[in-house]
Length: 191
Length: 152
Image (cartoon, rainbow over all chains, first blue to last red; front, side, top):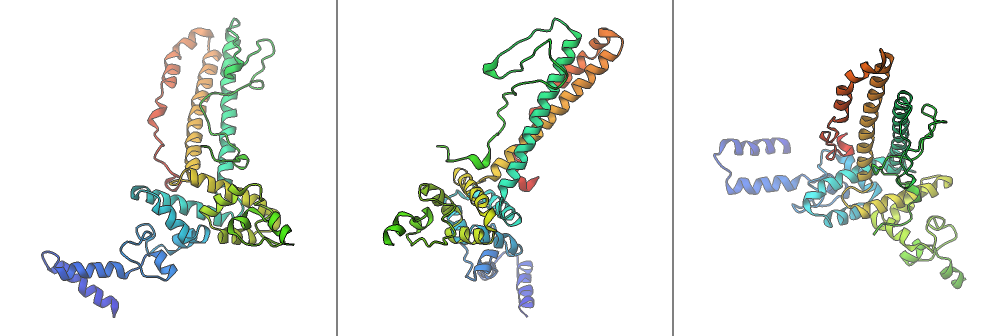
């Protein structure tokens, strides 16, 4: 019955040339009559100023449920209120991501993914260093008078022409500034 | 007993201004000498969520979980928009960049090896152009700065 009423009321917009005052009020009523996912879960009235409504539509109830389970609605609300409106969508997406990660992995959450990625970065850095050393080795083999340079301050490659063997001996790394923090050893926030 | 209670309350119970029972869920992981640790996680998750999450885990995993929650809370305070997800994005970009560099270096090695297995160094000179093309490959055109994990 309610569906049929809504359908017939919507048809008013199609017939008329422009929205009447009645139609404007009706659309406002219709909008506020469909609570967002957060207000549905929290069982409260969803006002037009609801801070959650733009980011937790009613057709995705699990999205808010997960965030509420991990962070709590009031904490999420406080976090969003402290942000400018244009940044809130990204903030909500990242909170949803973190909450899902925490639900999937109740011990490590996102930190598990960070550790894996950091290991991958380290592995790739090592492979890169080996490959770069290999190039130098090949070039040295072709040019016996290849210069040897040592600069321990800048952690550049240290070569020993007599003992250098293919891909096995190298020191240092490049200075491309890779993230290399052990997440569980961080003690305090940086200033 | 009042003196013992006051002097050995964990950081959580001190912060929440309540007594700290012997079986307090927070006390092993939020010692009184580090009040900032609990303040940080409380600000992001809330005491009841922290307590519930720890309760749901076996005891031997709770320390790790508390450390990870503290780390994520710190990231969120430092970066209120992206939290630790920002770090995940950065790491993805670094992996992509490193894989590109590695592919280039491997291609360079293949070229050099190929050149030197041919007839002497004269062949190598023919590949100079190819090598310089590899070195000039515009890696900065691969702009991944807008990619975040939920888009990957």
